[in-house]
Image (cartoon, rainbow, N blue to C red; front, side, top):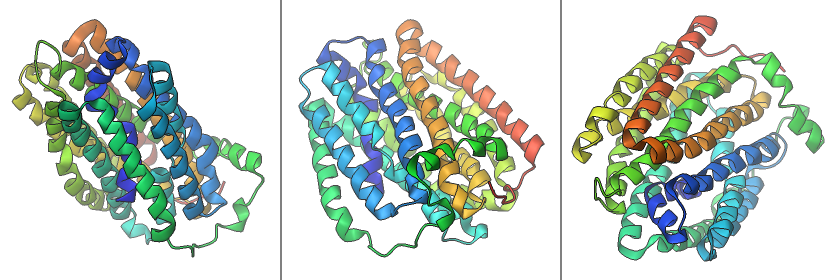
Length: 387
């Protein structure tokens, strides 16, 4: 539950972005600044804060970061204007670190043959938070207004912030002494890993493209369905997002399958399926019922591609995993920031047709990178090596 709540905060805006734009009197293109800065702030926060997971208690870090999220949400909830709302969203993004501490933390405590299953289970928890945010925000905003969404989010986060010290055990395995370095040295130690573990750049780029197109698709979908052409309310966007709940069940199963066939091979197969699914966005875009088909396909395989990418570096030495995760997630959220800007800008300029073509093109590029990684590194997980 805690993982779902702290993850959900960045995604409430997806189904209600049109209402927020209207509420502040800004254009469809300009409102994309809010999720874009949120994602870029998250990338900066991960770069500066996540490496601390190799040095300090994950429990204490999670509690501190959750308090920072509460602050950002309070500012968003009470903001009288667009500028302050954007500031609050940016602060919120900077402190949304807790969900990305957990995979590296868990990977140090499981057998290698169970890595895909455990990673996928944690990913499914994050997915659940995203789904609850998108479905709940759409329904609440339709009946009670978009600000009520943020009141509910703030109260939920305050409850989690109060509960965390009680539900997280104080006893925690000490971080390896080898990484107990001064803070600046610890953060800078991330960059040499780009040379010693070059595959992290390919895995990060694959996820940046995948996450960017995910953000772009859902922001554009919300604007498309609530446009005069389609005429739906924000609750319809939320209900459509609810169909993606299937991925909560399929992601752990696909993670186990990736353990058997190898993460890079599995990732390429899934990328091909995702490309086929996104090809349906353009012809099915005028019918909300037909849109369910590509939404189900992309929502099912997208998280499993992420799992395969994480498996390529979470098999490395335990002392490196948080910092490798840092590199991966920073690249991912840079992609998310780009997707936020491009998703709303492309829709504003070229409507749904332009969005569908752009997402399909990004899928083709993602698939090419998956094929390149398989050719360069083989199908199995990387062999552990030191920095």
